[in-house]
Image (tube, rainbow, N blue to C red; front, side, top):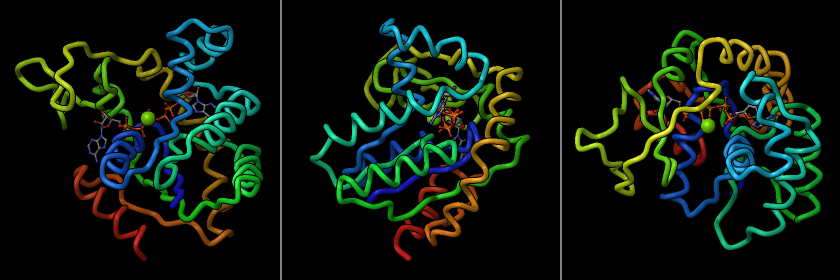
Length: 215
Ligand code: AP5
Ligand code: MG
């Protein structure tokens, strides 16, 4: 089963994708994570996108479609892909449809994660991630354990993202509403859209997604 997690910054896409990876033998394809990796390892492409990402704008379609194409061709031993943060424009959505067709695969469901804008600001400004395994924490709702060790891998270094500030978030939200939210109608028209309430507790959202993927 191949699914897309669609939602604004901070909706919980990464949090839920990690859960699906552990429980369903799926592979997470997060274009945000791939771009941050390129940036951290100092590749030419990474240097090119660093400023765009820090401002909260979208990277070009060409770059992210290229990243996804590479992964689709090389990653094959699993029970499906979770597209997290991709597609984000109608051009990316069309390109994904073509790529999937070429690979003899299809998108089975698009999970729209609905969260109020006010909650997004709160979530994003309180987020940190484990520098070793990428586990996602939140100062308010899922704090780093008191012993300072990641409860997933035992790592002791935690990172905050350069774009996790109120100023970049406003631009990320605008990019979401202007460029990404048309995908809600696009996938509704394809009969693939399933909306979940992303405002519940993390476990409640997990259960809603599981139910949406069954029915
Ligand atoms: P990307 O990394 O995709 O960021 P984003 O879409 O802005 O989404 P986030 O990762 O911020 O949020 P999330 O939904 O994963 O939430 P999370 O689970 O972490 O993209 C970053 C940048 O890369 C873009 O701005 C762009 O520049 C570029 N880019 C990436 N893909 C691109 C593409 N396809 N095209 C062009 N450019 C692209 O959760 C957030 C916080 O909330 C955490 O602290 C978590 O603990 C907490 N939380 C999660 N769920 C809950 C819950 N149910 N209740 C309470 N707290 C919760
Ligand atoms: Mg994410």
